[in-house]
Length: 428
Picture (spheres, one colour):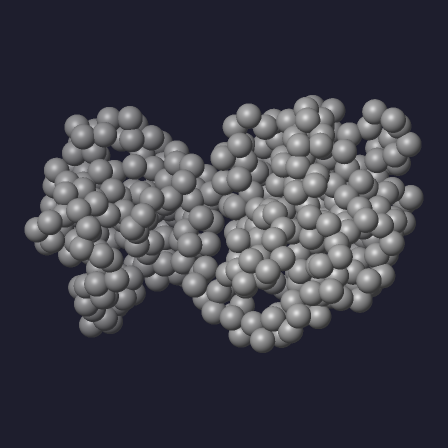
């Protein structure tokens, strides 16, 4: 490493971004044992067994990455890497601003200590920011794959938003493979949709009320006694539960006001029949709906799958972000609630469990799938899946879009949710 490079680069950063320079100076160094130089036709660094760039032709790799970006005047680069991509982008005559988001300050300081980065650091078109300080991603962007893998925990929110944006086209393509089966399900449910009510009938019916939105995360088990104690109270909060939370609730004699179900795989075992209200999307299995003993109200999401059906049989829309927790939360808001407490919304696997009331694997999710790290409410790492991380991103975006609603989290065991502080009565 070169102390001269480090000093020179920090001086440039201090002159342009003084606050950032002070933060970078405090970055923990990357341990020598974690860093290797990888030689090929070219050379690169390997950090924590993750190779930062090609070791054969870094320039060609950077040009290929640059070709994926449109010819815009403003671009965003998540992770400075070794400086290769920004140098290629700087050759664009029409580029007016390149914002480089530092995903790992220690990794960045390592790069500044090893390689000459003066050319792009001094370019007036460059803006250098810390991803950990940001709440949302910017478009158009390129995210260096190694930087995503090595992102510091403080930048986890941005990392997960990038993952979701990058993987969404692939998720949609997998979804399209099931379209024939899903369209068949819609046809089977047409008679029920004709006779069932519209979720819009509930909108505005609970103005100012507090709602407890109940997910199926492991931490729900901590709150069952509290739910049992108030189940017959006339002034209890509105209870809205997701379908897979019902096994634990029903076993303990707890009946929510409304259950929300959206998935084509929710059979009668996953959602046992009950005499409370059910809000459902039309993909829920026909037999599950027919067995339900309570009031049924239908809703749609904005998915193109429902476009034709919405014209034939109009029903109101509920927010959808991939998980049933999104429409359940939106239902509480649409009903007029101004305070929403999330129970069992862990979006992670605390304690090696996946769902309350279910054995690991019963719902198709195993701990082997938990390869993604997030921070819990104590700032500790808890494992989850990239899908669950994406659901959290969409929930955070929903919360940010509803600033007049007070959202609370009821447990520090699951993933921390931005904009959703911990309720003192639940997490003291």
